[in-house]
Image (cartoon, rainbow, N blue to C red; front, top):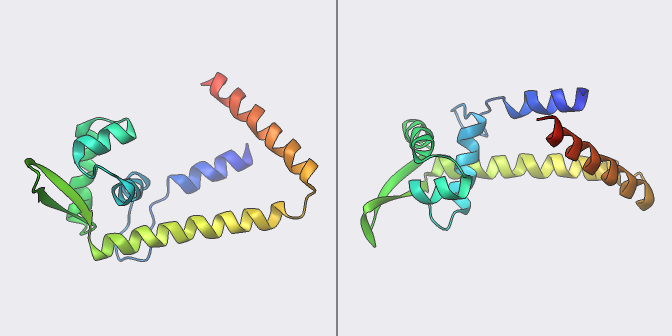
Amino acid sequence: MDIINKSQTISKKAMRFGTDTLLHPSEIHMVVNIAGSREPHVIGLAKELGITKGAVSQIIRKLERKGIIKRNIDINNRSKYLLTLTTKGLHAYHQHEKLHQSVNLAYMHILKKYPDNDIKNILQLLKELNNEAVEIN
C-alpha cells in the first residue's frame, strides 16, 4: 500500500517540466498525446483518450493560456483546428520523456540485482495484485 500511495501522490503532483509553468498531470498527458497523435484535434484526441470533447477542449484552453500549445486551422478541413506544441510545449514534452526514462533506468538498475526467475515471480505477483485491484473497484 505504501508503494501505491506514493505512486498516487506523485501522479497527482503538478510539475514544471523544465518550463516556468506548472503543468497538472492531465495537462502534461494531453501534451504527450498531442505530440504522438495522428489526429491532433479535439475529436481525434477525445477518441484516442476515451474522454469527452468537452474535457479535451477544457484542457486545450488551459494549455493555450499557458503557451504550451497553439491551434492552427486544418487546411484540409477548415472547420477543424490542428493542435501543435509550441517551443515551450516541446520542451515540456521532452523533459517529461526524460523523467520517464530516468525512472525506468532506476527501476531497471534495481531489477538487474535479481535472477531472472525472481523477476518472473515478481511479475506474476504484480499481475495478480493488479487483477485483484481491478476486482476491488
